[in-house]
Image (cartoon, rainbow, N blue to C red; front, side):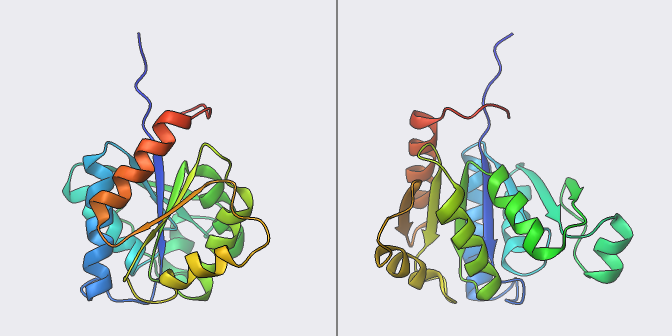
Length: 190
């Protein structure tokens, strides 16, 4: 039996940005594009832009996985006040910074939409940790620090090992990412 490889694409962004905002609609579009490309959407399980992306993926029949900073479902709901509608919830018990490492390292590609300091932490992890067969995507014009990530990355003496791409169109951005990870993938697993 031949296994079909499904790529894990993390969508990262501000948890405080309303899902119904302009940025929220863009995050929803990224999630829907992940589903159209047959990817598995990973998020940090939080509200805001990542949740909007999860809703977008779910609307297209995509699989959504939330990597929670909490140790249990109760902590996820009561302590963090995070949504529970992702199809799979993984509880790390590592807090948000520890969860960020697990989330990014689990992904074949990371897509950044808007974002603030927490998202910047996720971007630096992706910049340092993702390999050449992975991709880092930035949805341009999505608010927050997103447009600054590419500029900041270009000022570092060494660039990221992963492909770094930016585009304002969710479908074009996902096409670039999927093309790269499908043609360069040496990773095993789902």
